[in-house]
Image: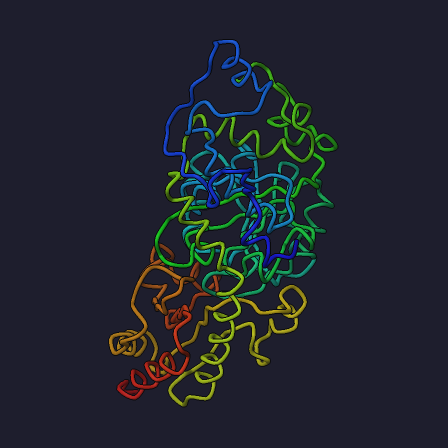
Length: 426
């Protein structure tokens, strides 16, 4: 099926007389006739459900849809995008391990890696996504377990060279993990360019309505864990906490990674989405293919307006021909990038804050990538834990304004921006 059809049809196929919409299985537990039946589930000898903290039918229906959209082999939903980011790395990296990551990733992810996971014993080396081949090569160590990047960096809007970083990762026998939140599988499928694992904050475009927090992890099924068995003992040696199962042997190349997350990490840490939230996420997914083109169309029109305005110092949007990432964006996302535009108002931070106070259609909100137009000053909000040096490394200047262009009539969005800019004194 084409992706537009997958948004509607994939993940759940009702049988004769069953619910047309995915059922909301709002239950913590599941009944079985015998202890033997239950035991087979605990031994991973049969598939099924026994406790929602590990798996739930509603969650799995939606995970399967996202898996199909990304072209993966298996997927799992999490309670948030942060949980998905954490699990995607922690599933294969622990104390004494090392990960290479793009320096321009979302501020929350940067802090997760540089502070929280560092306390857990995982070291990260952050590299400029436009670094030289020599700089990239120098970032790897013998204990490197993964490479991490974002298709479109939030909020720097740097387009990640997926193919290049995939080749580098594979040359060192490790997988490439790509956060595809901003592009969504409608505009980019990182697996087709060499990514091994794809993550999402489904809170953003996938939900699309600022209604539910969630995340997703998709495995491509293409990384050969057994070929690099010494690097990934968690997947290639017995898990004594789960009857000695060897995930790569039990579930094969296409199922080992996700099954380990479910059987081990979900069991112990439990960041599962509520079935009702997954149901609501599915409603958003059904219109994802309709909304994304409108987001991109509106954002391009807004970016062009801002680029021509005399009170705007600079504009960054990959869809603009003036963008240094225009050609790369055309390679990976020929049908459009995202609905987020970043720019600076002449006069710096003070002018940016004054401009934002005058907006009426665009709402000041931490959120991004939903139907409503919203605006944020990252240096004062999502990235405020960073110092100036870290901000610049992340592609976030003090004057940067992140505008998430919604799907309202673009004339109203532009009129709102024009009115606010008229009131800014430079």
